[in-house]
Length: 278
Image (cartoon, helix red, strand yellow):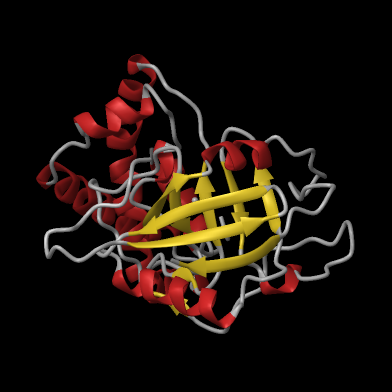
C-alpha cells in the first residue's frame, strides 16, 4: 500500500477533450429550446435543458452565429459517442487529426446529476482532461451525442462497487494536489521518510472523508435507461449533460456506423450543414 500510494503521489505531479421524448416544460413552465442540427447524414433535433442555462445559451449563440456550419463530426466511436464542434475541422484535409480547436473560452460545469445522465441520445459538452482541467470546465464549442451500449444489472452493480472502491484514491489524489508545494519540497530534498509520513496522513484523511460520504448507487431512472436503451454510465458526473435528442436518433446511429481512421475520424467527412434554433 505504501509503495502504491507513493506512486500515486508521484503521478499526481505529472498532472475526452474531448456526449427521447418530446419537448416539455420545466418547473418554471418555460419551454425548452429545440435546435435542429442539419448534417450530410440527415437531421438531428435536440432539446436544450433550462437547468443548464450557460450551456443552453452558449449553444444557441453559436448556432445563430453560424459557428457550426461546415464543421465535421470529427470523432466517432461506435457504441460510445459522436463528437463535433471543432472550428478547425472546417475544410480540414483528410487524415488531419482534429479535436483541439476552440472558441477561446470554456464554460463552468453545470452538473444536474443524477437527473440528467449519459443515457443514449444525451447531448453533452466535451472538455479537456482532469489533469489540466480539475474543475471539469466544458469546451466553449465542442459537444458529443451519446450512443453507448446496453448494460445488464450485474454489470451495473459491478460498476457501483468499483466507483465506491475508487473513492479513497480519488480523494487521496485531490488532497495530494492541494499539498503539491509540500510534496515538491520533500522530493527536492530527497526526503523519502517525509513523503511516506505525508502519504499516510493524506491517506487517513481520504479514508475519513470517504467514510462520511454516502455510497454511490445508480438511480432507478439510470438503471432503467442503461439496461434498455443504453448509454455511457462511466461519464456521469464528469461531463455536463445539457440536452438530449428528441428526433433523428436514427441519424446518430447512422453516423456512429461510419468507417473511421486510427484517430476515430470518419474516412468520409460527415458535415454539419446548419444548426437552426426552432
